[in-house]
Amino acid sequence: MGCLNMSEQERQLKALLEMVKRQQLTLKKVSEQIDLSYRQVKRIYKRYCTMGDAGLIHRSRGRLANRQHSHKTLIIERYQQRYEGFGPTLAAEKLLEEGFKVDHETLRRWLLAKGIWSQKRQRQAYRQRRERRAQFGELIQIDGSIHDWFSEGKLTCLINMVDDATGKTLSRLEEGETTAGVFRLLWSWIERYGIPLALYVDLKAVYVSPKEGGYSYLQAACKKLGIRVIKAYSPQAKGRVERNHAVYQDRLVKELKLQNIVTIGKANGLLEAGFVDGLNKRFEKPPRIAESAHRAIGSLDLNQILCWEYTRKLLNDWTFSFEGNYYQVRKTSCGLRPRMELYVRRHLNEEISAYYQKERLEIELLSEKPSKITKVQNIHLPFQAARSQSEQHPWKRPWARSQAIKFEKKAQPIGSTGRVDKACHDDSQRPTPVDFQIT
Image (cartoon, rainbow, N blue to C red; front, side, top):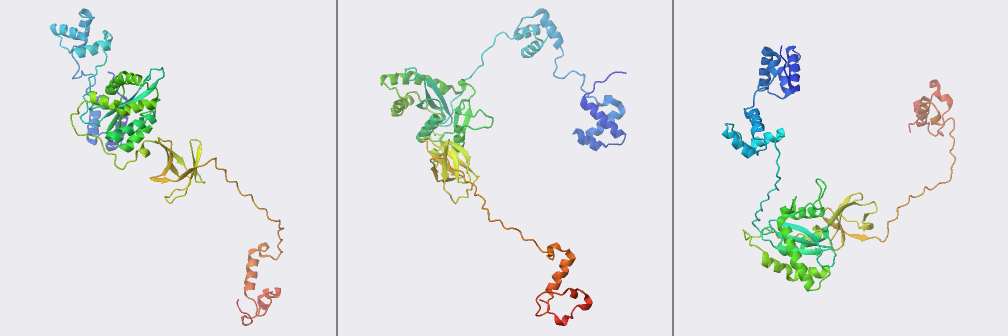
């Protein structure tokens, strides 16, 4: 008898079909359990009854695949005998002359898998220059260039925005590549041209959050403005803004030196006074589509969007803490209650504002931390001794006796003092109903 190689799934199917033979299971239940149709399970069971275990093995097992080359082993042996050290392309050409037809890429994979040949030359990744976007404002590249802009050995950062379609640029000098600097530059761009469709940024935490599914402050602001944030995974991906840095490092540095400007404020004044417009006039390209893709600001308040937003809980005394300070919230009619969440925003001008849903709250900065409310001490009343009850009190009598006395008190004789003689408890000596009035 030969040996059959069965997979785990086939062995499980054999056990189920044996249960079907013993009438412990139905074919319908088997089809539901192994996720096959009833008709297919029926065919497998019929083949199992006639062929045994061999009927459960896949029919293609042991057969040569349709896409498998029939002379693979012979070709590899021939390569080792005569063409060892040849590249796959040249070896495929030589093998074809001998009657062995094989594609050079197929031969390369075979040789790499066997370890017979290794690629000696490592080429750099080919990067084709991406075509510009069609409309102005369709894609804006933004990046920071840290450089010695004042030629004094002190590094500062020039944050630069370049339109992908036209090469139009707008820049601002800051102490570093910070969220505040990016907000100020984006605000200037929106006021001058409108809201762009997308921003192309690198993976710095200033632009995108390093956490999976998180949002940076720039991403949160762009989401409110409807701006798509696209990540660039290499400097070459946003090459337009990277190359534009070289223009500033050449021309701006020389202009600052000519005018003896050594402060960031005066440098930004130079940029806004016409330096950037002169660069755009010289290097700007016309877009393929003349219509701008920017959207109008409309009723949007950039001061409430380009800011830092946090969540805080309102305490029971209608105060909240933020950055080491305490703020008092005046009670409003917007449905805000203690322990609810509110939004606290820090703006570019360092102003603090608080919002509940979409309504702005009136807040006041407190000079000190609010004191905790102390608990009211319990007032001790003079001690009064408990009065002891008499033995005739209903609480000290059995229940049946107390109920009898209660009934006797309800049936009092007219003009009596409310006391009932003990002899009246005898039914023979009880007065007639004529002499009593039920109260």
